[in-house]
Length: 338
Image (cartoon, rainbow, N blue to C red; front, top):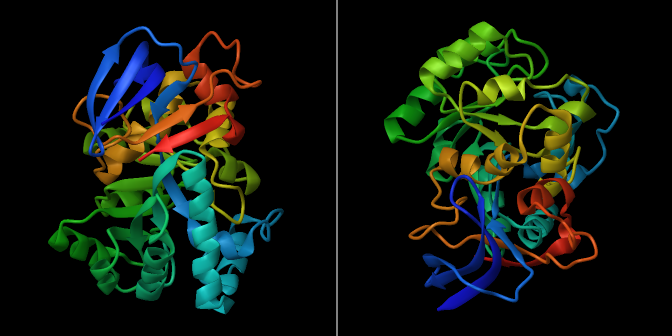
């Protein structure tokens, strides 16, 4: 039995409660309102809704390049670097990134893993000794689903993914696809595949939003990566008004996988509340991947981010949700409970 005390952000609305979280065998036994001397802020740990961890072998190599030059299959800089990477070096680089994510409050990520079966196996190996459990969207041959948790397609303009979608249906695993990143031309074709997750949707228009709402398709958005690649700003307010929206950091080669930076950027540049952004960084990604975390309430998995509310950065903040979303950094992390 373990108790985590402080200002606890409880439930899906992140109501601040002075008290404690009682943890027993990895589950939240109770959330109790009680007097406490602790200055900690206790939030749900993060679920990063879109990553490309293989990029860890080429950090910052693509900054300044266009989308096609940087990451588009099959001949972009990313794919050339991945093809040339030694397997041991790739596994080591991804493990380092996962360790960084674990130290800064992320307990899972929804990763699009290139290189088929070999790529999915490499990520499994990288995650073996780290407290981050990647939900792997595999690539290439549908046989990747023997190892991966779902299938991640590059985009409907890149290939015909009907067979991959059908295999996901047969195996009852999710099918995800990039859409609307460089322009809107691949959004309707992506929606025609009846996906379980759309990624980016930078150029989504009203007719796309209506289809998304009708089919209840969640969307992962990656504002910082979109800015680095200069592809535009996703209509996050409109997306939130139509469906579940989760927050991801995208390619490690473009940005570090910091959910603190991603939240602060989203809250400042888009028409969203701090509570909405925190939900995008926690409960939304967990819901998409079917994970039992992202919300602090009895019965849930105990995946908790404990921040030092008396740090030089956070001391004096009058709004704990905004403190987490707008102000907190990795330096404020006291511990992560998993």
